[in-house]
Image (tube, rainbow, N blue to C red):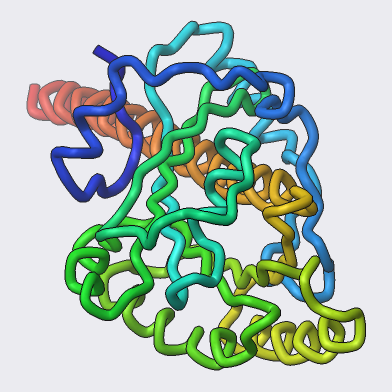
Length: 275
């Protein structure tokens, strides 16, 4: 059984899924050797642009040891009803776009497997309902999310103004998640309307500490960039955490050994002085 590395897994539904997660048919698209760049470097709090030497070294050790640890992170997608949350997830996961999706009831769940620096890594993507009557069901799945994708619709600016409300709801159940403000349906608005809304979105992204990214689920524009970026950022955090925890254990073990050695020497010195 694979070991799961995640600080908080929120339900038995999640745990039951991982023993046989299929590898994506588009493995090449899920392989990362270089760090994906943000859509706009001036509109992100995440300044990483490459995998550090420490991370690359740690990954080399992981691959050499053939460790069977299953690394994953939880991503939730929230926003008003009909802003395109399901279209966004479906475009990424199955490379499909449809216009006749039914409203999500509660949550839908997808799992996508990456190979980052040759280390397997899984994104759990939870597509939540935007309708008020399903809000209590959806919010129960927010717990333990590492990433929150806040979705608004370029063709309905009111959905952008509702983002703070969605953020407030998620922060009641999550602690310091990575935030992404994502605008959908950029292909259906005029260029002037797009620019005006984008300016407002960028201001909001900076206010709430989110990385901004506009997408089109219809054309696929920026969709892979978004999720590849999310995978790289969370993967880097996890590997650094593993490395730090491992170093702390080594330091602790060395300290104990050192302390015992010193204690033994002191005891011998004391006995010789007593003679």
